[in-house]
Image (cartoon, rainbow over all chains, first blue to last red; front, top):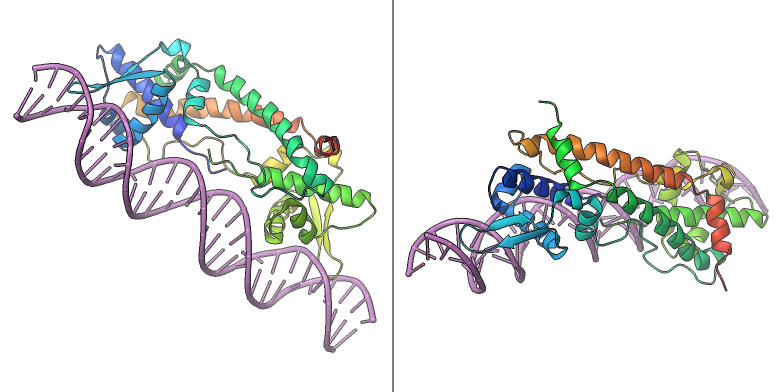
Length: 144
Length: 144
DNA sequence: GATGTCGTAACTACTAGTGTTACGACTTTC
DNA sequence: GAAAGTCGTAACACTAGTAGTTACGACATC
């Protein structure tokens, strides 16, 4: 499917900010997060920018600026993050509209649409079951 | 996520072959299916080739050749098709391995791995609930 | 005013998916 | 055994999305 790492990196960033704040710091910089995730600060800023639009994080500018959580991780689910960073559907329809004169070409899109909607709804439900607090717990549970 | 249309086109092809066979024909050609799906015959042959590896369809060569179903559509689910045409995982990990010296960098991959596996298992379960016979029924149920 | 960080544009590189052409392999038909 | 039709597959081009990188203005603190 050519999966991407956006949800993974976003979860990484949120977990990092949370743990950093628990150590007493107010904000985390994209530089620090990028270093932990082994990527570029701009990639982090872009992702966190989308999370900010969704109301999950806040940012400050200027000296001593950075990112902080806008809500408790217990009230933040993977669905919130998913919807913030993954706009499109899971499965695509035909690129070119199929032959509408053919029974299959005519009926296939509504048929698959209905099926896909049900599946995506289930996916959302599953993502909504996992909070970012769960993620942090699992992260800290990794054996050393 | 940059979704693709492989599952959609594969379902289209299977539905088309089935209905064509119900009209008394033995095999369907990639040319006919491509015409209905409004794509190129080679695209259809590639996809059906993967379905053949999975034991869902059969092909004949030579004059009067083409594709036929290897099983009843009632015994064929979207999961069978999905697994045949979509090898990779739904969500990707970091491209470059995160900083193993950081608590988050160290624990994030196993954490997300476990979560993703559960979600993909649910997705599989949902896909397994829909047979290709269901798809054909929905296709024929489209209002004219 | 100097400094540090975000916000964002611009560009490159890479990959996956799709469409297309071409041609050999194979089987039927005559 | 030659012709014809279809699969099987390689090769290539095009597109879109993701990610990485550089650059620089905007902004807030000191």
